[in-house]
Amino acid sequence: MKKEDLEFFKNLLNDRLHELLSHADSTVTGMTKPKENFADPTDRASHEAERSFELRIRDREHKLIKKVKKALARVENGTFGICEVCEEDISIERLKARPVTTQCIDCKTREEDMEKALGM
Image (tube, rainbow, N blue to C red):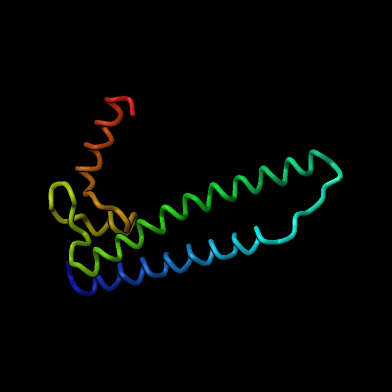
């Protein structure tokens, strides 16, 4: 991969990481506010459902943060853009669509087909 492509993906991943971390900070700040008292049980249930939904989103973002950090480590150690299965180059188009990917489209398709066949 060209040096300018690596620099592009490094910047893209760093920007994504900072965005995800700022979301996490705002969630923590929102969770530390004093609890609200709701006279209506329906209002309380709605509030709890919203909070639960937000926590699920943040959990998914936490997992994505780990993937972004691993991708940045691959940029640093020179393995970014190389499929971990077949060791071929991952296309730039695929990396632009999913910069944290570790597999080329062919290997990922085979993996997903296998999962479907096994009912996973």
